[in-house]
Length: 261
Image 1 (cartoon, rainbow, N blue to C red):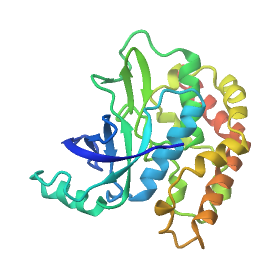
Image 2 (tube, one colour; image 1 turned 90 degrees about the vertical axis):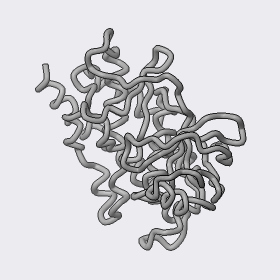
Image 3 (spheres, rainbow, N blue to C red; image 1 turned 180 degrees about the horizontal axis):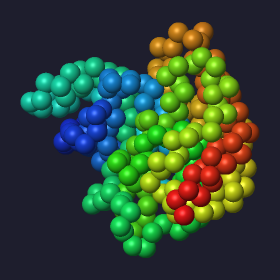
Image 4 (cartoon, rainbow, N blue to C red; image 1 turned 45 degrees about the vertical axis):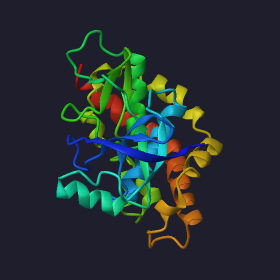
């Protein structure tokens, strides 16, 4: 289950990303990074964040806790930036998404010692190839070090197939050539082992349970589907089809890794 909270206090905007997320305090007393449904990619970025994040959690990767967030129209009313005010107004009264804030975390970089183990790096590369995450590169690593562990954040650019539903099942079997730019690829020497370990963990029941977490509100704006249930089923079909074709994206990643060593 994903709990739903209400943002009670707007702390500060985070200006690193193009979608302008913010740090907020919720009515459960916790601090979250809030991602707004009214931002550029709308609900699809939040769906990708939720689905990829929960898949990663099932696979044993460190993912900040995810919540659904209500947003009061009065929140952040003193924020002077008109762009942020517009974003808040576009997202108020709608379900947004929050991720556990990791205080004092810092960005991972390739110079840090010791490097991730080959097992962990391979698991992360496999996961990102599976969810087609284009945003884990040296330019934008989306990895944090927190409490001496490696945490994965910002999966809104994953599942990019859902921006165009044409031929989505055939595209589920893509090799994902962009894996060559993955920031951990040079350490990922155990990709076949990762495939053998991780693939069986994503059973049809688990995939369906994760997709069922997507709020209907985020699924109501897609002309390709008659209703939210049909829309959810398309996500399930895509993810199961891609899982069956894991040998294709694993081979691509293995070949890309071989060129680095």
